[in-house]
Length: 177
Image (cartoon, rainbow, N blue to C red; front, side):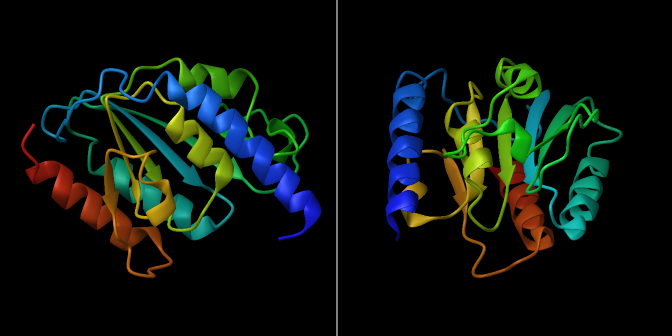
């Protein structure tokens, strides 16, 4: 890791720890999909296949009384992106912390379940997961990120979200809350 990367990592981790510390045990409880009424969904929309998989996952809830709010990250710079559920590199600082109105609106919601649908590291989405006021946070397994999530899915080197969503749906449908 180069000097610049080390400095960025230091500031990212310092900020993350400071903001996530007071939320660590904030209203945490196990909630299954049958009892969830409000789900937050974070994903990386830089890959168009991810958008397709997220759309399929959201369709599973179409006939249920569940509100799903999604927020997608695009790993590129787009000026004046008017889509309310997308943010991009213009909405993160130099050490990958997201900011702005879209971020604040997503963060102030108290979700029953927050699902961070990523199979590879994405620091802006990780930060949003760690600082969320969600009752139950779900993400893919990474051994050095266990303090962020309440439930982690081991994706076994899978690179698409289809496998991840199948596992999330199966486990959260059957878990006892």
